Image (cartoon, rainbow, N blue to C red; front, side):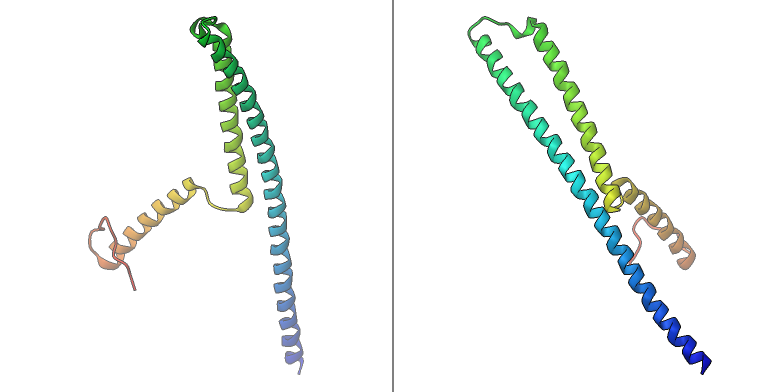
Length: 149
């Protein structure tokens, strides 16, 4: 009689643990979604900033093109053009750096393995598969293992 009461309460505890686990997972998912939303807003701000910079650069380039076409300006001799080129390269490097960081943060927030991690796992899996083939078959490992049933 004591054992049935004990088993009944452990069943309720297991159900309680399951609902706690479900609540925990939902909480983690909600937090991840909030982080992703924040990252999306940040990415949108960066994109708008880049679009504004691009529009400004386009206007400036159109002005320079007008001066070049009129013969008033030789872009190869201009220090301003060299300065703009440097600024453009710096802005491009900064954008790439920010987007790489943003991509890394999104991958971390979602909990997905990176390409490098997947490649490493595949290499290890191939090694283990060849070792298993040699242990089970007693023959030399082949480049392509046969599927097992």
